[in-house]
Image (cartoon, rainbow, N blue to C red):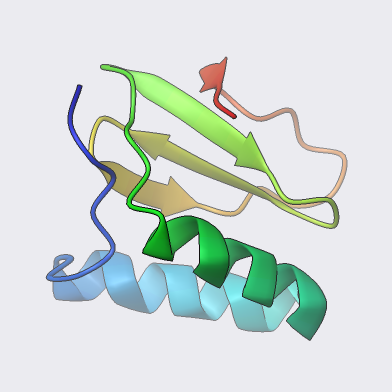
Length: 81
């Protein structure tokens, strides 16, 4: 199973993720939970996935995180722990 990449993301994808964080006003405590999860070098299933962090969800595909859906929007893919 591949690891989810958070370094060396394509520039456009990185900018999109940062814009989503800003627009959704994600609380610092939940961003710290995301940071701890990233440091654990999580593995991703093949295909689409999402991870729930409480005030937000992170959706991705394979090794790439893709977006933070807005509140009320259904995440896509398989939920990962």
